[in-house]
Length: 200
Image 1: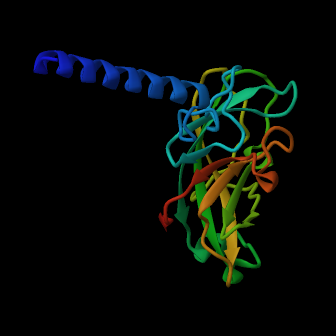
Image 2: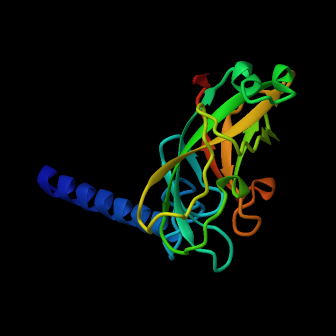
């Protein structure tokens, strides 16, 4: 057999092996991001899949509760405040806690009833939730407002105040929790990993 014929035969065998290998991968699929074991970040209805992990600055499309509408949520970041901020409004435990201000952008996609963002967003540190502090009076460092009093499709920025007591960990994650589709306790909440808080 000539060297040219031998080379052609070896090439044909190699090509068949590559095709067979590709066929096996198509049947089984890798266990990586594109394989059948991967968790898609978006569901067929356009909402973000339960259990998705995002970085600060990324957006999730989530349902509030059944029939209440859909919103787009972007956790922008978190800042460490000063206990003096709380003393200025007469908070009696100001010297026992450190405040943190979570910055969030929300765009209502559907639904018309106003709601409070703290009903759905939680801040955790070291695997434990931090306490949310509801401040109803004017509070310049982090003014909390209701969502949904504007028009659909209008993006607005909001702020939520959380407090950490001595001995608790700094906040490192924010979760969307609607007590239904998304629940961080069972691993289905939408998680935003938070960078180390800067000073407000």
